[in-house]
Image 1 (spheres, rainbow, N blue to C red):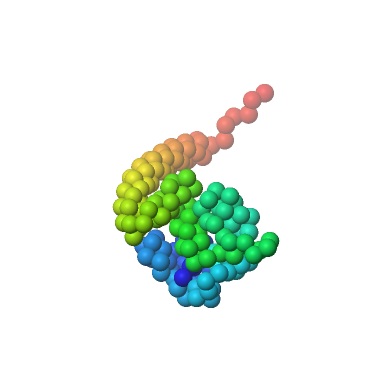
Image 2 (image 1 turned 90 degrees about the horizontal axis):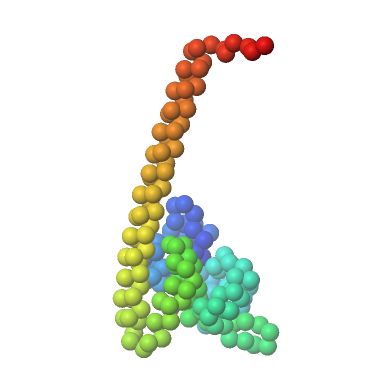
Length: 169
């Protein structure tokens, strides 16, 4: 069920599959080799999601995932894989881990995920507004830099046509 969330600029994962945020929310990507397994090891988790074991332990420490233990070994359930998928998706679109955890924790309310989906929808809309504002700021900065380049280019061109400056004694 889980699929790698390390996406390139075209939205493709490490295996070349194209995943969208909507796909991730819908739980798409069931073609992974570990999708049918109930429990997988930390090594399988790192391979499947393209994250380090250290990152998985960090997410566990933050309460985002909760693997079971078999001695020293961590075993990750389908639920852990789904939660990790949402953690990585949230990070990808700019949510803090605290925001992601708050949304994930709503799943446990026992209402079939309705509250979680409504809260997530609201948070997604807020994030879209933040990202659009950032985009406007970035577009403004790019325009200012382009104008500055044009001024510099004109000044350099004027200096080139004026010839070399006289040497000082």
